[in-house]
Length: 157
Image (tube, rainbow, N blue to C red; front, side, top):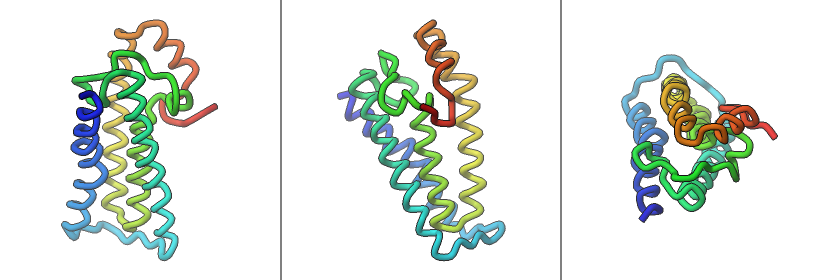
């Protein structure tokens, strides 16, 4: 049942952020200034693919290691410190940002770039003002130690 909830959440929330909203922005015909990458634009497929794979890996770990979902109303019961979480505290958000950066490149779109910037700012505020305080209350000292070892946004070893 948890896997089904994770799948539904992933389709509707990250799916909307990375597919539906960019599609609506692109189909609106709004373009503020030209971004021309020429044939380099196809390199955008790399971060799109990598981001999608990283998100799936994290969702798997949340579901089967953490015993919960990525949804804030059904979070993991156990803190997930393995997989990509060893390198960065928010790999799901990083994965979504990779997809959006790849879309900026592939579609050569300044509107998607602005949208991606707004999404990142929203992620950052959500993490700082909701997620991290909630995890500190729930997991206490173990989360504090984790925060001291692992960066919020920039992967490290």
